[in-house]
Each structure stands twice: as structure tokens, then as C-alpha cells.
Length: 203
Image (cartoon, rainbow, N blue to C red; front, side, top):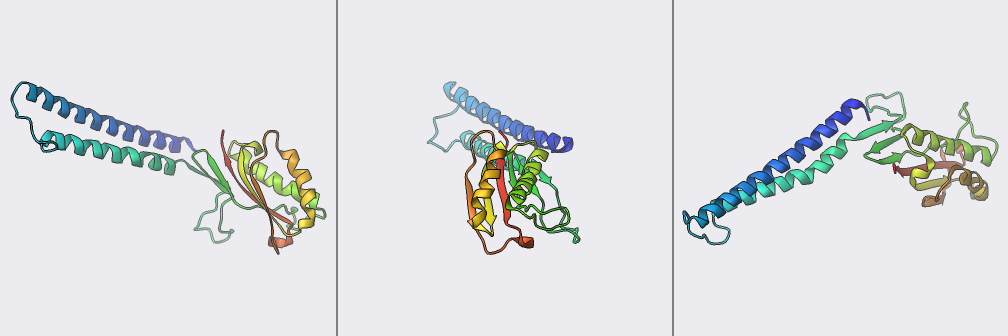
């Protein structure tokens, strides 16, 4: 997230917090004023919910609650950072970004492990290493590690390489393995063996 994004996010949060605090203070003031006037005998006890001050205080409190309920969503919308972004206006690139960081959660697009010339590596081991290096690189750009992954999906066009993939996969983690699905498919783009996508949460 850039410095302007952080400033806007903080400003939005403080604005909502200040509005909620002001609403709460106004409601408390109206309620205290009603109590004092009633104790002094300036007003008669009204029927429950009928006094205009109480109605006003209730309305203010409801408005404050509405503001505060919207605040987290507004703040979250401001905290969005794209990894390898591709704009919808650019028709010369593929129509997806590498990932998006929303708050502390990173959503990664599927990636494959091709060679620089866009061909498939000769061995399953090399391809597994390349595809997992792509995932690791995207995580690093977001300030995360492989241990921050909370969910992984692997799409595989050759299930006979399951053990080969797992042997490489194990070397990328130092803590607890995240939940994972290993899904057999008929084809992967460019005739690759694997496509991997995942979700990570910054701890």
C-alpha cells in the first residue's frame, strides 16, 4: 500500500470514529438534559418512548451505529494492493492480475512453472520448483512467506507425479503446512503439469 493509500485509510477511519463519538456524546447530553428537567419538575414523566428528546437520542444512536457498521467496509476497500497488476484498459496483456492484497489477506491467481522460452520443463521436479518459486515470489512482494499461506490448490494433469510434487513442496515450508487440495485435471495451459493458486494471511 502506498503512503497516500495509508493516509486515506487512516483519515477515513478517524472520520468514522469521530462521527461515532460525537453522536454518542450528543445522545448522552440529550438523555442527561431530560433527566435533569424531569427531576426539577419542569416536565411530566412521559409515556415510554414518547418524549421528543428520547426519540432524538434514539435516532442519533441509530445513525452512529450505521456509520460504525459501514466504517470497516470502507476502510477495507481502501486497503487494496495489487501484485503484478494488469489494467482492464490494457488489451495487450492477459485479463488478470497476479494477486490482490485486501487488508491482511492476499489472494493469488493460478500460476504455472514454465521455462523462460515458455516451454514445459523436462521433469516434474523442475516444474514443481518453478511453479512454487512463482508463488513464493508473489508472497515476497506482499511482505509474506510461504508459511503465511492458509489455503493452497494444485491442479495437476499427471497424477503419477504426485510424489514428485510433494517432495519439492515440503522444502518450501518451515512451520505447519496449510490446507491443500490436489486436483486431477485433463489439461493445464501450455500442457504444463501443474497450476497452483493460494490464499495467504499476513500474521
